Amino acid sequence: MAKVPVQFTLNGSEKAEFIESGTTLLHALRDKIGDTSPKGGCHQGTCGACSVIIDGELRLSCLTLAETCSGADIKTTAGLAEGGVLHPLQRAFLDAFATQCGFCTPGMIMAAKVLLDRTPNPSREDVVEALSGNICRCTGYEPIVQAVLTAARANSQNAA
Amino acid sequence: MAIRRGRGVAAINYPTGMNLGGDPTQALVHSTPTGNFMVTLSSVDLGQGMKQIMAQICAEMIGVPTDRVIIDTADTDTGPHCMGTFASRGTHRAGNAVIQAAKEARQVMLEVAAEELEVNASDLETDGQGNIQVKGAPQKSISIFDVALSAHFKRGRSISGRGMFLIPRSYPEKETGAMKPSTCYAHACTVAEVEVDDETGEVTVLTVKNVFEIGRALNPKMVEQQLVGGSWMGISHALYETTEPYYPNRDHGGTDFNQYLMPGPGDLAETEIIVLERPSADGPFGAKGPGEMCANPQIPAVANAVFDAVGVRIDTLPITPERILRALKAQAAG
Ligand code: FES
Ligand code: FES
Image (cartoon, rainbow over all chains, first blue to last red; front, side):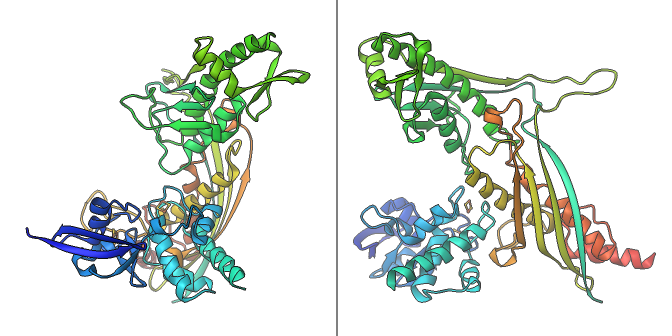
């Protein structure tokens, strides 16, 4: 199949690749660019493990064609830490023991980030709603919900 | 037609590991030239935290901080033999093997330190911070870093040890059939409260209160994490999950996450976890296997709660609305 050029910003740096038409963003990120933070859990839009942020919106990278992302601003969990300092969400997930096998974690963190970007002081219901597209086998969800609420509190304290 | 409440109780005991044709795990421990310690295993960490626990055990035995221990797991081609990570056996079997391997390595380490300090190895102790000192005279000491350098570059010794833990196979007695399937058991008890809609057959779990007896909790936060996730998974097994809803018939089995049901973050029951620690006689530092048993007692507790609520015994899992409605219909038909 013919290759097509795509160019986008990934976690602040410019990326350009030739990809086969029809390649998913998940495949392009993991296997071409080497950002393995989005995980492929189902490849059909039902688990949320592949979630990334495209132009501020939460997107499933397994259902997004890479060629539709030209010019986009893409963020993944791999780009959250700054200068070796973990993002408040990452810190909160660690402190709350909200990750076991870790497979769902990057997707959960992306979903939580979009929530907190828009709703800095979410209710428990807001958090549950925001995470409802993400499946976790291990934690029983409660530690994840708590981690997101803790990160929100930490953010608002820093802002105050 | 109404929403009916019920409460159910269940208690379980759960074996740590299995009675296979003998149940072994082996471990190797050796020091790097800088006095870090490497634990080689073929046991697998699949998210339950085995690497952390094995690092804690090795560190405790050798006398170094946990971050000085490196765990290499899960290569069954090259690692020492392990039967695998299943049946809640990882901490118990691999932990005991690591203890034995670390003991042997520690002995060599103390012998090298003794030569350096010109004392008897039996007069030495570790301070847990990476130093070896003379008992009662801590000013006479040497760092494990320096001991490792000496062993590697001066004394030509390998600070290493071999560990082996084997639960031998238990054969049933011919007369009675009695046997010893396991050497230690974890225990749990759950009280579940449910609401059952007798019109739709839908079950909502309101609360689950769990008490788990798990031997010694080697890492209490990780134990809690396991128990919280396990309790949720138990409810999921009780009410939702199956690959063969009409077993043994395979029809209508879920093939993806659209069809294979699991409760999400919006379906959480109010959950309480209490941990009792009764150290086991043969576990590493008294540990048992809390892994799988923590997802068990919720299932009979929910089944009993459903019976308490609507008077029907569902003995096939999961307890779906369909099964409840069919049972209610059969009950009404007398
Ligand atoms: S891999 Fe994209 S939703 Fe599961
Ligand atoms: S931590 Fe394993 S799937 Fe969520």
